[in-house]
Image (spheres, rainbow, N blue to C red):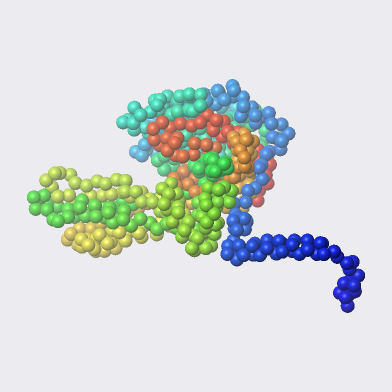
Length: 570
Ligand SMILES: [Zn+2]
């Protein structure tokens, strides 16, 4: 009834108006149907798929910065401070704190570690206020822990870590260095020398930040700890291991707000967007030693395959069966490429969609794996690596070899395990053993019985892939917000898009494996725009850093400490 009434009450409409309304309706209808049609064909838009993926928290500027920028700008812009910073890094590089695999327990053979005594004297001379204001502990002779006690003991401390030692320089490569490796040379833009990148700039930058904070009158609520191991490059069993023990004894398990150490993928531009990429996990290192024992004899009457020949077949078998790639939602590398897919146009539309769906859609996942596997620098982010690095065998030209060995170095994928990796290698060994009727022993347990032809012996030592640090924590908010603050305000103030911080994966290993019990929030990150390992000569010739990066690293530490201090625990 009301409808009839309504229609009766309607004023008369002109033909022109009716025609206009009809045309508009047709256009609207056409638009809607096109949209429905595209949605039917392609129900998931990139925007839809990106929802909830790689969400960026706030750019975090400490309240002290919002009130007064001069303290931070002194670090970033003051010429005298820059010169002083260069001198400090150069001075650190000039003390060759090299470690070799054969180095002995520092408490048993301290002379071997003399350069570390010199290094400590250098640090104390360079940072008198830090030494006066913080509690300094020396662990196992050369491990250094600085504690700046906060006023609120209920708040979890933060740990900033680095290592004092550097890898040796191969004598044969010295001529390839632009400047002698331990001279520590600044050319105004870069600082050159062994350890400049790995990790003396990190170590010096943390001390410089703390020194500035003391100078600027900061009184922490949250305890700040600096921890510097001295044998990271040879495994960390005396340095970081002992530091962890000390911190666990004093503060307890899971007692730290967060930990930042070396590693990660630094800072780089991807399609006009500045990315900061701290690693939130690292792969598991494992070495497998395989020995083959066979009967000897005179080489004038050899068998078809000598001991070395059989071992070579094993090498061939291992290398022709690489580990299967896999990419689960747990792998931080997926998080990283999802961030790239969401915020840049680095990938085409289809690839973007597949990346965004890869955690739950099998077809998409396999397409992404295929793509990543084709790119050398990405391949080992989704796959356990195997590198046969050492082979020994044979003693005399006219004697059949009776014993040969090889060493395989693995970095186990975060989607895999020590068991899975070792089972693959055992499978390779058993296959070759059966072909030549040989026995197999794994860590002294019989897999196949010894025969008159001999046997393989396999031993391994490995560390599981690290836990993945969560991205939904206050600690991550503080880290990522602090990185974005320095990126957007100082490193790339003119960038066309805001920066993105993406948790990624480290293929290499760090001291952090010793600190798993201290906190679940472990980040490997250095403010470094020369993020490609080969570019900076880490562990190679011409190691160097960009001076601007060092300055930004100090600024980042400074603001990170302040932001962490303002934050509450979870
Ligand atoms: Zn290192």
